[in-house]
Length: 387
Length: 158
Image (cartoon, rainbow over all chains, first blue to last red):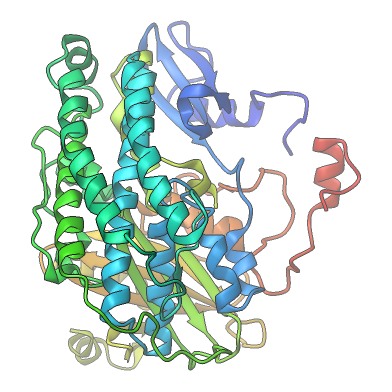
């Protein structure tokens, strides 16, 4: 049992030490980073094993934000659980909702009507941009550049305004319903989204002007925290991190969901798998999202926004795994139905949780200051890691 | 493909499909061999997820579920096995390194041990916690009162 009075628990230290060498080797220093640390993007504790400034290895201690989302799911009806999923990756709440709604729709054997699918794509891609903006601002701030934070938050505000007008909420939106949408788009929705796109396109150039060739930025990110494609696949790392290592894999293309197959967009990839490449990939992804939204708004069909879904949902006995490409990687839901109004089991496969596993490998041999850069570049949200 | 496995292993494997998704119910003893074949011959190089489901009324109470994906084939498959309470499952960390935390989470939430796992301990809950919350007999209001009292210095977290 952990002694309550020691922040740095002796259990953990002993575990760390038994891996290779006896604890307190003369050249080795064990330091604790977090759980309350501004650069860990939430409540993450990292125990670092150092040789001077060099990282020999590290261990993540997580669970500080565990709320038992999966257990809650078993005690709520399918509809009632929907808003809870927004609280996992709270900077990409719309993506969480999309994954959950689509999984339950599969269990119910219904499909959302085309108009609903289009609106879903628009809102989800806006969310991807918002998530990447928040990532860029905080990541740059961690490394020492303050200006990008103000720029990205200024522009992200415009997306949140669209959400607020659409459903009344800015962050945990609960935008989608099982079977489609609850709200029809407001008057002037298309125009406002287009205005945003025209406003936002030059802003990406602005971010890039600040960073892409900035000497300090390049020195702090190039060849830092590199990970190979093989290691990514072995560790189950997905999303922009995998793509930056050169694997052209995106669930929107590989196993299209919603109606992504109707849109023309590219999958940006990197080569070196380092922090700089991951930065470039996410910047390029924002541009691709703009392209998708533009096509979706132009082709927005008329029609119903809700499929025929029973008021009391009782999906037939069965189990479904469905996953989507969330801004952080593959977000999967595995839901088991026993034919009642509540799911028998809801499992969430969060991208951040699995991606965080790679932190140890990515930081080995790097400097302490680079750990901050690598945590930032992994783009984790602790609400999703711990659920 | 699941049918091919059925041909090779006979009664130990039951191929199933639901909502267009393939999965197979595999006898626990066949698990290590099946994983080797899936990884090395069928190119399922990405272990997406490992989880479990608890059925307290069944004799073999737990379903352990692996979700696998192959980049080369762009195909997903689920492997499921049934075990009794207290029985362990072979760890797949040597096959897919990413299984490490996923297996720890299953242990944390269900108390299912994975043989050969390099670091089998809790991941989300504190080390000294009693009970495994995702078991069906663990109520939604239940908690480890003793842990809360000692470590947080409060009567109850409720």
